[in-house]
Structures are given as structure tokens and as C-alpha cells.
Image 1 (cartoon, rainbow, N blue to C red):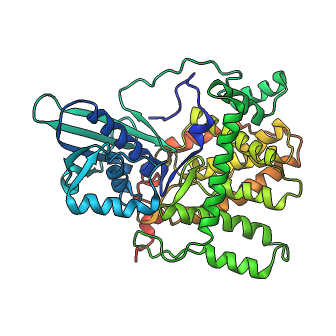
Image 2: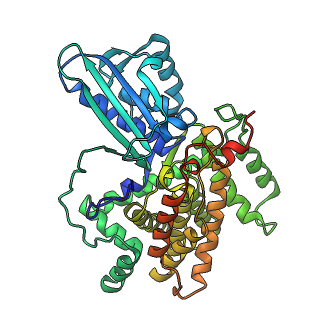
Length: 457
């Protein structure tokens, strides 16, 4: 099943960039939101539930322990959201539930919850999507409440069998393809980023949207800075040590702009810092997913640090443009690694970041579209094969590669006039077809690739 957004359903920038917690948007953030939505449904039923349970299916079952899906379900049932839960307090919250065998459903209804009984891992796939969850609440009297949720990428969830709620609004400049974006630019004399910002006025004022983008930028910056100070081993048992702090100290000691490698070493460091923070369960921005959360922040930091005439408006334009490109992938393919492999995560992030940087550097719409195309073209076929089901190997380093590729793609596009043989729409369709052809063992199941060829310690 494709998780492409239904035709005509508008997508906002707030759907592309959400502030949550690691390590995975599809396996942590999405399941937490689904569990909370189900908990609220049960809480408003009026009956006291006897038992509440969840069965994880497909990729969620296969890599759920490594992606903290089990803890996400507990947190969501207890009423927490990815946006509001304090990552530092998560261990204590989980410990209290597991030690007492009780949780407050939706934060208000005490129930007995035995994790071994009430949270099951079923490797069979639901027909609708590789990331499926079935929730069930039993009562002393009356029918149970049952709901099937799908985590479709980037933390977004849908309820299986339920028609998406249609939003009764008309965007000033609706688009579902890069060709339409370019045509809007010609007729309305708008950049791709300006088109995105104008469309957001259907939801809120331009000032409110700018404020949201500034919060996203601040959260990305804070995540890099936290990652530069973290030490020790990442959780999960692979004994992967955090490297960002030591690398940072080495670069600071050496000084900046001494060697030709300095720029890409700093960019790689910033991406590394974000994804180590994500792997540790810290606060990150899905951009467009958690597994690819380091690419856009690293490219944004590159712009703000190494571009002499960088401005706040340039940073905003970078993020608006990146969001417009991300929407194309959501509408025409998917950003779920369980459907597309890592080309749908790091590949999409690279494409978004390349377009954003090209725009911030003054590129034309044609050059921006070209940058986005280059960014994806050289990530086609990228598999998702996390060792141990953890968002660590190869995910952390893969973000550093994606950030460097994005910068390279932007400058390649800016050296041309925007004309090129392969269009962005063509490369998105190629990504979609490649994802459908890719065997499931290479799509976030840890049944193939590095996941089976690297011996866990």
C-alpha cells in the first residue's frame, strides 16, 4: 500500500516538521500518537475498561524493541505526547508503570497493565501498511473497542478503514508536483519558498507561520548543541559510543578554516550530533523523519556559519523551500522507510536540504528544483537495514553523508541554468517504483543487509 497523501488533501509545513523525541518518527512518535488517540477514545466511552492491549505488526514488531516502540505505546496510553513528554523523565515514567503493573489511561483512568500480556509483537503484516497496530479495550459489559492504526512515516498516523477527514479549505496556490510548483512560480512570480509560505495562510497568519518556522529552527539548533556535549554509550546493547563531543573538541582545538576538509568535517559533525541525540531518545525535529533528522539541521547550520551574507530570512526560506519539496514526496510517494527504504528518509531529507540551500543562496526555481532532483537521484535504492533494529548503525553516519550530498547538490545546481534531463517529478516516481520493488527485508525489518551481516556484540 502506498502512503501517498490522498489527492486534494492539503499538507502543511507543520506536517513536515514536528518537534518530538527519538529514536524514530514512524516507530516511536507515530505509535505514541496512536496509543494516545486510542486511550482518549476509551476514556470518553464512559465505561471502566477491564483490559487495554495493543498488538504491533510487521516492521513495528520486527524492529520495535530497538526503536522503542514498546515504550512509546506505554507513554501514549498514559496520555503523553511526543511534543509534551520530557525525555529526561521518560525512564521514571516507564519504571513506575512496569514496576506497579498499572497506568493511568489517558492520564486519568487507572487500569491494570501487564506488559507481557497486553503488548504483543506479531511479525505478520497488516494488509494496509508495513507499520500496523491493533488496539483493543475490553469491558465487563458491552462490546469491546477495537481500532487499527498505521504509522505512515514522519510521525503521521491514520486509522485503517477510516476515510481521512477532508479539510474544507482552498490553498492560494495548490500543487502536487514539481511541474506545478514551477508553473506557479512563473505565473505568480513567487519562489518555491514563497509559494509554500503563502499557502500556509490558509491555516494561520504569515506571522504565526514564521514563528513556527523559527521554533523549528531553534529546536534544530538546540539539538545540535546538546549533541555536541553528550558522552557515553548509546542505549540498546550495540555499545556504540557517542563521538560528537570528542570530534567537536578536536575541531575547536584545531581552529576553523585551516584545512580544506574543515567545512565538511563541521557539517558531518552537526549531523552526527543530531542523530546521536535522536538515538539516545532526545528532543529532535522530524525533518522529515527522525531517522533522517540530522541532514537539514546540519545544512542549515552550514548556511548560517559558512555563508558570509547569511540572514534570518535566508534560514526561513531554506526551511520553507525544504518543506515544499517534502510535500511532493509525501503526496507522490512516501517518507516511510518501511515502504521506501532509507531513500525515503535520508534520501528525501537530502533532496529537501539541497533545495532549501539552493534557495537560500539565491537560486532560481529551476535551480532549486534541479538541486532537489540531484539530491534524490544519488540516493536511489538506499536500503534501511538497521543493525539490531536500532537507529544507530548505519543511520547516524548516513545522515552525515546525506548532509554533504545536499550541499554538493545545491552548488552543482547553482553552477547550471536550471535545465536538466531528469525532472524532480521523474526522480520521485523512480523512488516510488524502486521502493515498491525493494524486498521487504531491506525496508526497516532488520532481516537483511547490514542487519544480518554484522554480528551484534
